[in-house]
Image (cartoon, rainbow, N blue to C red; front, side, top):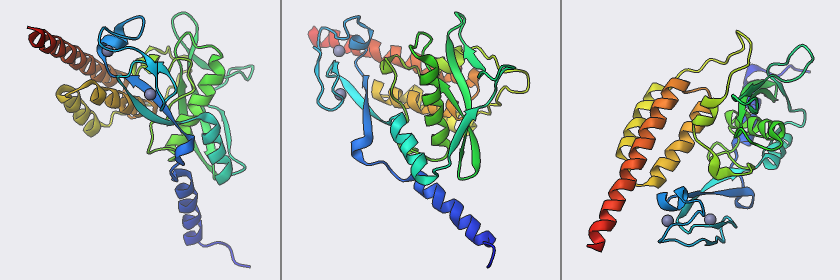
Length: 265
Ligand SMILES: [Zn+2]
Ligand SMILES: [Zn+2]
């Protein structure tokens, strides 16, 4: 009998990593719609004077035709992937109170909006953060699902996609604000450390300022959410980026209005 050499151990690690990262087949990749027309998005009915809602064959939503799709993989398929790679995979709450109950982040109204977990796959443990809107039904279940997706993404699962979904109202998702709004209830020392990826932030700010249409801003928002969830952006920097995105969005809407007026003239 020989003990596995370091090379074998490294090879096993790489194999696990590659299997976790393998792309998902098209049939399990969901389509999350994002309305790109400011008029449609801001109106209560979800449609503006120029666009009427219809059934979209791609995302199966009754929605303004002016929308793009963001790919996502749902909770069940992420779990399936973890099971395939490591049947003994496991997760736990990162912090629990004296009664063993998970410590959640709450908003000002006391609604749960955030949760930290640890995910262990192939003997390696990583942290993940789940967030949800403050009025979310079944919040804890949603938080666990979101945290698992987020932690799995840090293992490389569905890294090539925007890992989102299974929320009552996906369009209500806000790239950064949700995490920012969450009131931290972790005890001292349990607060996760965030360090901004400066190179990414600079590039993101430039992209926000130079965006030619709303779709670019939507993509940027999704990236910012992933960065924030991965602890690679501080709340402060997240808010700064949020402000730039909002500013550009207002500018694009204004430009469009002016164009429409000159077209009409
Ligand atoms: Zn519209
Ligand atoms: Zn669609």
